[in-house]
Length: 223
Image 1 (cartoon, rainbow, N blue to C red):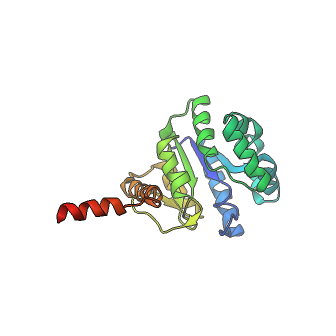
Image 2: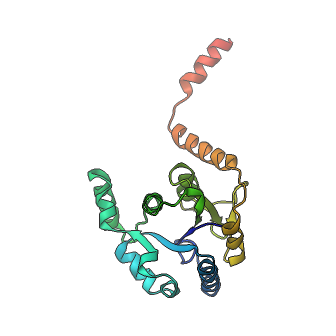
């Protein structure tokens, strides 16, 4: 049985970008999951990549305030931004000036790693319920290294909607799909995810590369 469960607010429990949440379903899901976690002594935390003001506003207007107190709700604050370093902090503030709903996807990795360290929790004792194959799933395998499950109703890859990738664990807004993951997390296969990331990086890195010289040389050698 897991000891800790982190669940993303936007994109899973609240509408975000092109995703529209089914509020009644989401409320029932959180209510049942909260009850299960309390009964099994699992700490349930809500994570948002929004800056404090925006995160708190969205939280206060939602049904979530009934299930999460302030000690179980994490969001980006000025201290986190300051610790980024001068250049990254400046870039973050510029993004916030342009868009108050700027979302820092990497924040959850920093938060989770710090939480595990401060509370002496082993990675295998924690679960992240997320939705993005790159900034959630792949980053989790590289940084916090906890188990994760992807929300199958809103699977994205850096914000763009994509199809399900084989080998991973998934869940939906039915508490039973998460209970089984908390009780006994299944063996997953990361190779399809790694392949997706590799192919995406390859496309980005080679997009502006001019291969005309390589092709010409190959043709000369063939002649």
